[in-house]
Length: 338
Image 1: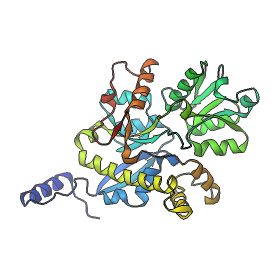
Image 2: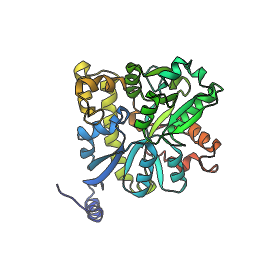
Image 3: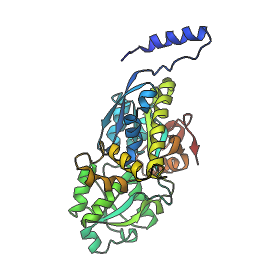
Image 4: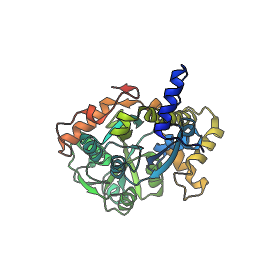
């Protein structure tokens, strides 16, 4: 594969401009690292990678996997990762406040009519009366870290129910699952491809929907370093272009069923390379299908939801009270909503 430096590419641009021709993208054959979690909700990156949309945009892409949102934000700030999809967290906002990162797009939102994130109760808590979120008072709620999306969701649900909840930080999603199944925590909220299999096992029960408490919730965002957002506009636009094509394919196949059952089967096989890859496809497929949620077309951002999240983090003194949303979000790349 031919590789050219940024200086060479700029020189080429100057040359073709002199003849009045279209300049090639600076990002041609640029190596980038993209952070992800092994969730169906990250399928936009997986589809774009597998179907060559990133390559077509001139990007030589490597996927790097994480187990929680905040370490991914740190990796973006340090330069170990170039782009990523994750929830807004206290860590992400604090890094944006320091001028290290920027949200540049939306990835996943709660939407009425589309099965979304579930509120779960352990079997022991369920048997003791936690059969709906209205009974959360005095209960414990699992989260990865303070300031995580789980902390935000749990707090907003508890506030709506006038419930006092104790949050338990368990660092990793796997640890939260173990604690919920064993009854060490009472409740949690998570995407459906994880929630439904847990409920089917009988060790956990679904007691509500996050969308009932946070309609239009911008669950995850696309973000990058402030340097990429400010100084690498062509590279960033090319990344978003490839990613958005993956999102469109996913939505058309899994939501609109444009390719029928054959299309769903093919898409599930692609996602299985990254989600539940340690299970046989016949066992992984139902969980992947259960996790179907519409991704944001064109990586559009719900600014109203992000402002609500920022305001909550500030109200909890988890981030600086003076930071504004435009310090966190660069809305110049995609359509903004709200």
